[in-house]
Image (tube, rainbow, N blue to C red):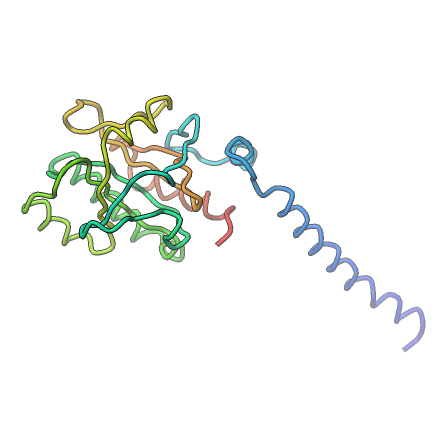
Length: 209
């Protein structure tokens, strides 16, 4: 091999190293450190945004949530996942069931992303009635936890996506929560499953995990 051939052979390797280094540095610089940075980056990435961004974004990590046996359900102790939380009452009928059905189909349709996603039904100030409990058996991957309505209302009251329940008359909402517990987007039954899927896949594509 001549000296010229040897030098020319180095260039593809150097270019590849340069590209990889650039990607790593860019990823480090772009990784959002605050909610404002996160929303700004999502805007630059051109998210399809069929759902509504929760403004300002708020964190659910300090909510007092419990499992069915009364044990604390602390967000920080859960597996790192994107989550769709559906707040509701102990009796889930009509709109509530339709929203559960839609989000179940979304979870199934996420394919390779499904392992990074979880649905959580938050029962507000109530016990699940027998009929609703039987219905939940149709949702084997739905996590059911118990929370306080006034606590969740206080968390969301100053956002553009306040808590709504059947008794309140407003459309029920499902909230998309990122891996760190930030409530980022909200959906109602006006959003179909395909729209939710497109939003979620787009966000997951640009998030670690």
